[in-house]
Length: 346
Image (cartoon, rainbow, N blue to C red; front, side, top):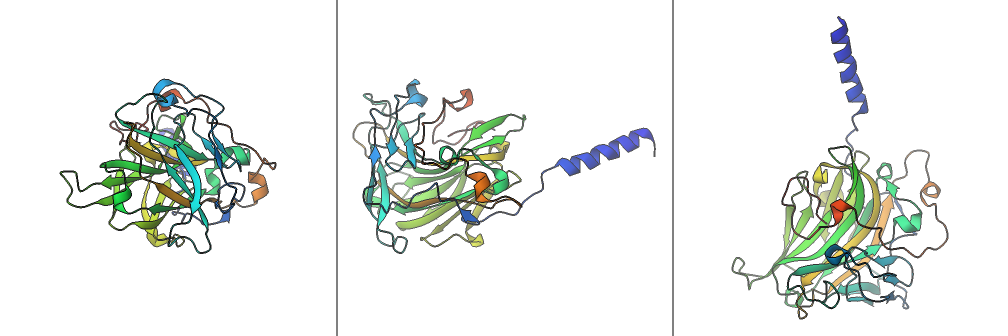
């Protein structure tokens, strides 16, 4: 074997040895529940404190601190987009989790810049404190996942507008095709298809999955009956993201797997937060669909030799701080699908 051949063989061995091993999808909810994050909304004194005008950094680069937060320190306003106009604990809608008496209602009307009407679709965010309460992000080696129940109201209660209505998302960071570590936001959207639109002859909803490797969304199941759905997302040590959903409130299983991908051609490294989006037409009149969620929770599978004590660095109760200044690549994000390959849209 000549020198050139030996060198080529060595390079091939190194490439195989350093290539991430593909992992089997992890069903969201597998492993240990991270109890210092998440919420069940069972406390009767649960409340959210607005703290002034909402942020609208994505539109006008104004954050308007100090920002809203929940009394229990588990939820906070996004600094990029403001919090929904209504965030309150309500009785659990029929058919919810057994024993659940409280859930969270979110709906919005003035979703754009405070004091202005854009006449366009806008959105508000509500973030669940994960990284701030743990004292660190969750490394993907811990196979992090989230699960949340979402109540879809009767279709006559939805904002009568064909388009995106609600988002269920993860805030993660990964290494892109150029080697840079950047944030991106995989998850689900619930789209309304109104019978008042020319292209549809009946009301229904559809799940849209963000995103494929090229950044485009994936069309998911259509929903013709209102009621509870369970959504979950997991990240495996190979950097892949896995999407699950099912009708009802039962725990997710392997049969509920919808899709797996490396969104935007990025390999996930860290799970930072879970958050929800509420969208409406920002005309001062249209209220968004009234969305109700229950029992959002985060789970991990500790790597060999590690325990939850290695993950939870911050043991005292913390009030979440608002998101840091958006990066240059994250200033322009909408509900719409990415129009260019690799463009990260929030």
